[in-house]
Image 1: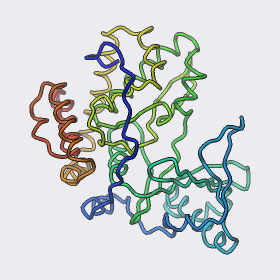
Image 2 (image 1 turned 120 degrees about the horizontal axis):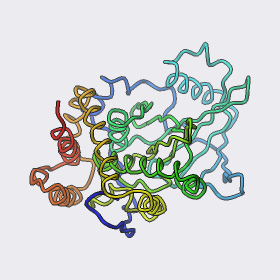
Image 3 (image 1 turned 90 degrees about the horizontal axis):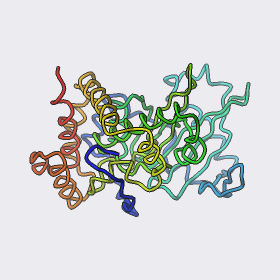
Image 4 (image 1 turned 60 degrees about the horizontal axis):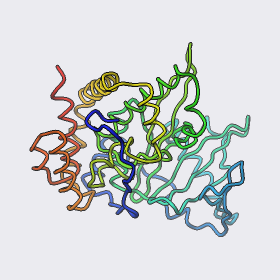
Length: 353
């Protein structure tokens, strides 16, 4: 779907096990400055003290790869109020006065993902409405991904860190694999809008080097509009921020799981229309870069020297980006942060101030 590729290839596979990178002092200082690092009453390790777990199945009885975990009563008395406080910290700056009617309904655990997340369900006792947040092992790659998403995408991201613990909000939307299976066969008008938004999502991922956006790593936010629906594709997994060496890992349309979206685009768009949508998104990214300039400068002072991928992968990606953009400057980059920064300048420098 990218303008320089004619047909998608569907044989790319990400690394089976991504290396986790600890948050170093410079990144910790950045997080403190921008109010992301706070003292939390619960650490990731505290949640590992469960004494029982059962498989969690969906409404159709299928295994979700999550397990519901249970704790001793003494553990729950201390743990659950602190988890409610963390939810308040994320949503009301810790004002518990408006949180008295909230409680922890369930905690789920997933050993399938790199950061082995816990998912906490918070329920409103007054109306049974619920929300979720996640507690994960802090990984520097993921933190960089969350920050870049917050600054450069149309989406704001809520997350907090404390030592080896990462707290993330739940990002609402229909999982991409379910969306592809159930929602792309609607009206032509809606299908065209879906194609447009997938092109723009593809462009956002490529410009800031967010990899592995297979259908189950993003959600689709659907908003009813006057004559149809509006769609927004949102990444929910940031483990593969600037980690892989293959350029195609950063282009969602190359994954076989996303092939129905690519085929839909080939049905409803020509090259001129596709390039228009790409340029629209690049212009928006350039504007976000300028509006978030000082925060991005702080971020890249740290990211440009941080090691968040094996050197072999950095060299491979630098070579492929230099060839793709016809810009030898990429070959002078020695870290993934420098490659992301150079990618952004490819966009920003081509736009009028």
